[in-house]
Image 1: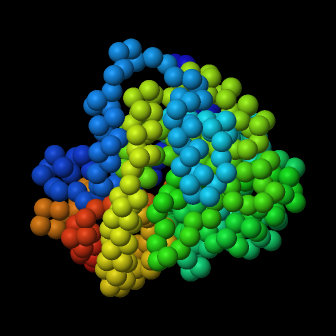
Image 2: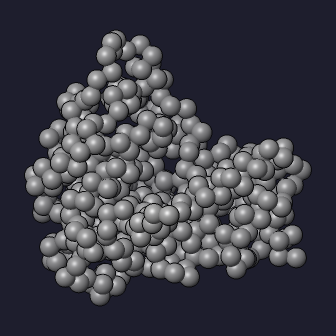
Length: 396
C-alpha cells in the first residue's frame, strides 16, 4: 500500500469540526444541538450583497485577475481609507477566504523550517496552515488569568532565533475575543523593526469591538510599511462565510509581487463571490450598529450565565464573538464528545470546541473550551443551562 506523506499525517484535525459526526448522529436521534462550536453568525447577510448576485448580468462565468477584480480592489481600498488606513488597490490581493491569504503570507515570508511566533491560544487552523507550509509555530503563552493580554515583550525576544521570520496575531482574537491595545501594537511594531521581522495581523474581526474600545490596525503604525501584512475577510463582517472571499494587504511591494505568484498558481478567486463582496461594501453603518449591539447583549448574557456555574472561569472578550471558558473537567475533548453522544436535557444538548486545539504547546488548555456566541440570547441561556446540568452529571 502506498505511503501517506509525513506532512499529511502531521496535519492537525480541526477542533472545531472534528466533532461534527457526533453532532450529526445526535440530530439523527432527535436531539436538538445548540452550536456553540463554530463562528457561523446567524446574522443575515446584507441584502445588497445577495441582490448583486441575483440581479447580475454575467453571461460567462469567467476567470477574474489572479489578484481579484480591479473594481473590487479599488472599492475595498476606499473602505480602508474611510477607516483612516492609507491603502491603494495595488496593495491588495483578493484571496479565497482569509485562510488562503494566510497561506500566501506564510509562503511569501517563510522557507521550509522557518519559524513564526504566535501568542496562544490562537485560531486553530494556524497550526494547519503552518504544517502545510512547512513552517514551525513557536508559541508564546497568554493566560486566562490575564484575560489573554499580550505576554511581556521579553517573552517574545527570548524566542527569536535566526529562523524567526514573523510574529502573527489575531486582533480581535479568535478564540479569546481579546482586543490588543494601541500600546501593545506599538510594542510589537518596535520588536519587528528591531529584529527585521514581519508582523502579520489577522484583522477579520476588526468591526466587532465593544464597550467603546477602538481597533488598532498595524497599518496605522509609522515605519511599518516594509513589515506589515494584514489578513482580512468578508466572512464575519457581512455574515458571508460561504462566499470564501478574503484578502492580503501590504505596502511592501516585494511581498505583494511574491504573494501574487501564489495567487497565480491557483488562477483566481471566485467571480460571483467577488460580485457579492463588492456590493457588500455599500452596507450602511446602521447594519454594524445593530449587529454590534446584538453581540454586546449576547456577550453580556453569556458571561453572566457562565459565571453562575460553580467551577467555571471565563475571560471577558472585548471583540469578535468568542470566549474561552475553563471548565471543572480534566479533558474537554472527552467532555465535548460525551455531550453529543450520551447527554441531553429535555431533548437538547450543546456542541462546544475543545480549546486544546487552539494551543501549540502540548498539555495546555485541556480543561478549556471555546464558545461562540452566535446564537440568539434565549438560545444562549438554554445552552448554558444545559452545560450546567451536563457538568453536574459528568462529574458525578
